[in-house]
Image 1 (cartoon, rainbow, N blue to C red):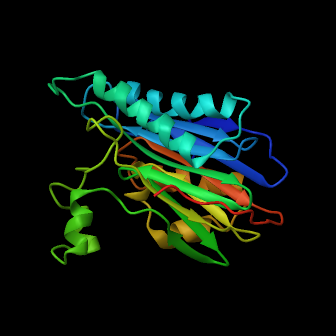
Image 2: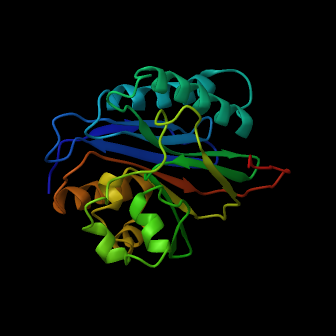
Length: 258
């Protein structure tokens, strides 16, 4: 299937290569997703403006601009600086609608690769996956009402997809005065592939398909994943970044923010 897409091409760094894609989908009138793909700084992020709310694209812009300022700076990027940048974005987005007459907000899912480790951060239902030696693992936990219900045993994974509150998220940048950001870290192996994506992909493409496609080179994987989401109906904006780890790593005492 041939689709019209926006492609963000970034030359590979010495240790990383990545391909990013974003597409409006087949239903929405506006693309409220935003991407950051900086292999030179090891910084990648997806922001999904809250669909159906006011200024979702503005909220997503605020998230990505805050992270891009770090990538454009001369100082080293740290976990503390990433969290501070997102807290500042949260204050900005929350301030767009201080009376909460119509909620603005954006999810975020990002990763920073430095000193042999990967720092992962997220709020909302944009996801990060890791493929290692053919096995796919979801590195993030969805901040959704239905995820809480799944973990409580009230819903199954399948029934959650069709639940009336399937799209209701419990965390987002700008949704509350104080941002509740989830963080963790990972130590990559040679040959690992990471996928960052908005729910326009993860809601439509199953994990078996994602696992198979991530075994392709990053540019072909990105194309295949986008095509799969479009073929499945493309009912939301679709954005993704595939990051390949290809060289040796050394670990130098990274500590994540808790």
